[in-house]
Picture 1 (cartoon, helix red, strand yellow):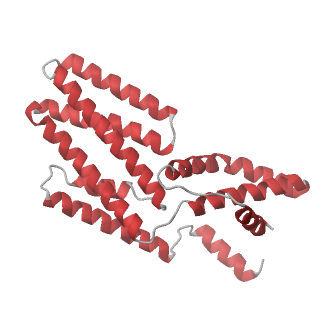
Picture 2 (picture 1 turned 30 degrees about the vertical axis):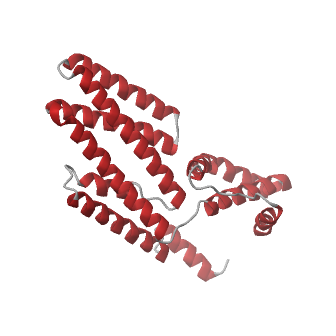
Picture 3 (picture 1 turned 90 degrees about the vertical axis):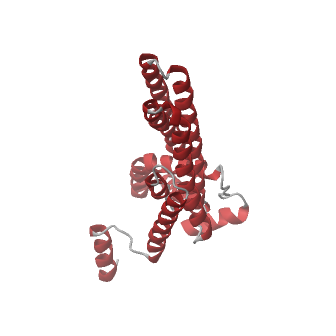
Length: 248
């Protein structure tokens, strides 16, 4: 390694924030999507328009498939939670003890399901519990307005998701394929180093053990994103040769 490369590596280590132009575009795209969601919510005169811009920012992901997958699970979780809040309120609007018991039971089930799941699936279960609490307890103070509370909450979330998804699809969309190929290439390099043995094998084994939890979560996230944005990883001979050529 030359002296210039060593200095560059030290600078990257001491300041690990990537200031590439793609990250600036990503930040600008997310900001525009959030402002658009907030403007639409104000135009529709919704009750809490801040939820739309918060959703747009929370939904920001580096790949289009991840945005669509996270948005889909957030929509499902929000709608299911709002339905449970309305259903419980319709049964126990004048019975506070059963109402609180039903909400606590629902929240416990959602937390358990979220703990047993991963990534976006877990996120959807948490949203189901959280939305039920918001709709149920806020609707309990004004039972005649419970339907509008649930409708406004769901509409604000959907607007934020739609704005971020549109920005991700229209402005420099990035597919999940690259992330999946990078993950497969890293495992290929580690496997080849383990087969060779020696010091290289020891270093590869240490790298594999250190990166296994992160790579596992990233792989599961790629699979969740691929549910709505299919990818192909080393699916043909040409792709396998491409991975091998990068590893050589």
